[in-house]
Image 1 (tube, rainbow, N blue to C red):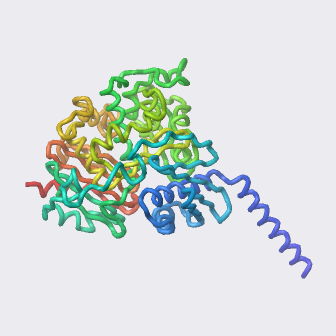
Image 2 (tube, helix red, strand yellow):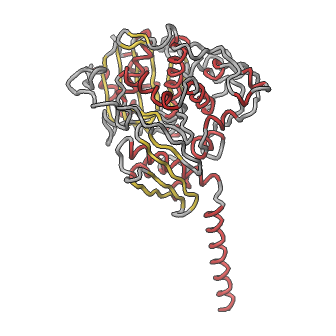
Image 3 (spheres, one colour):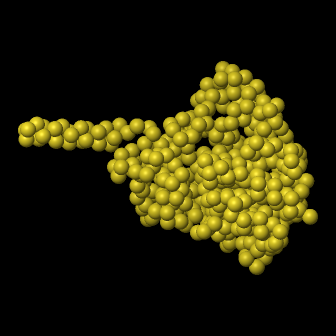
Length: 454
């Protein structure tokens, strides 16, 4: 019996060692995706938002995520500005690297593109001093509080679980704001897919510069000679390119592989086959927007000018001193998902769209471009606009209930939302960590704010 027990123990040790070796040298892609996600989120929140890594790992990564993420640990090197994540303490290590001015990038074995030195003022933390608390928004950070709106954003049921920031803009004024515990008006927050609308604006800026045309086809050299050459820039903007892309989250799919394993995200999206005729079918795709980033960046003579463009052409003119758009390892902005900014800076971008792409009387976007962005597309059945915005949120369409027909939304993962109503001169910014399983409906807050208008 003792011999049998010894043999059983030896076998168990051998099996455990074999399993550990397999995980160390041939980790399943699900584990690599999880470590990539953890490394990226912790890195950005530590080096951009100034948060503590333990809190970010527990609150932002493990609490709302896949059960396996409970076994992920991170190591932060503040001198090298890196974060390395390992599941079970040793398996599937993935590193994210912070580069001032360009945020954090997941390496996942990819060769990091040497980025041009950031332009003066393009460092993390903003282009200059924080807006003065003694000057009214948007020039400063002082709110012009109206009690009717402030009482609504202070209501925890309306603001929702995991709320980190809410800001209400009316007639060009910041009339209400609220922040969750541990967050304030100076905390940059991730917009997730709200970043897509910023990318659409960058495309619009290049249209205004005469360097892009929504009707242009033959966009990508590797598409030459096949039906993908028929895809127009307008098809990409409207999410109707016809390219195959699996947008499901929670497992290893096209979107999770791209965001947390691929060094060249736009190249990954460009490699996808055509599964529908361009312009015929709506299919929401994060890969599509990263193609847009590659395309607008390619309108410059070199990467240095492209990398400096968002700050020089958009963030600086709007006073968005906190805004940082992050790149992938190839040096292309992840225009689908990775922009951090304070709630007040997200609100500045919203005001810019409310003003049809004008800021302080100066036209930055082509006339009518914002109207084009929110024009409904037939392929989406009216749910989506022509350029990276939504016309429906949580089952409510623009033009129904008390939501005017010109209402549109910027929406992002885990509860990021900006409602814009040009006819009411109104925008509501809501940021947080609110997974869909909580059942929170931001439209209840939006509807109450519309009801409170004079």
